[in-house]
Length: 102
Image 1 (cartoon, helix red, strand yellow):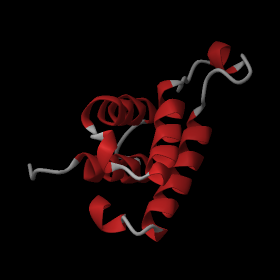
Image 2 (cartoon, rainbow, N blue to C red):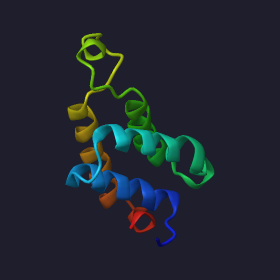
Image 3 (cartoon, rainbow, N blue to C red):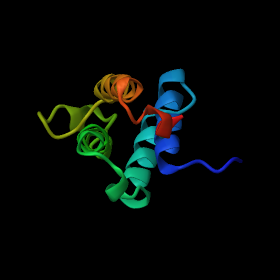
Image 4 (cartoon, rainbow, N blue to C red):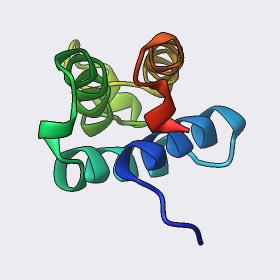
């Protein structure tokens, strides 16, 4: 496939989750892997770190087990992940850095 930057990969994953191409679990595993291990933090603005970092944190706490989700404030469900992805995508599209994601 074409070479994509880490930022483009994150955007691709977000679009893939929203379009149904990726399950929430697959999205969360890939997103945290790229954000935690592949992206160069020095290339991110503080706003990007806030937005993407929060999504990565939520993604790392994703669960689809009822038992997990019954514990308050520990795990994130798919609805929460999807909402955050929409917010982050909106934020990227209105930011000065949007070119870096497409």
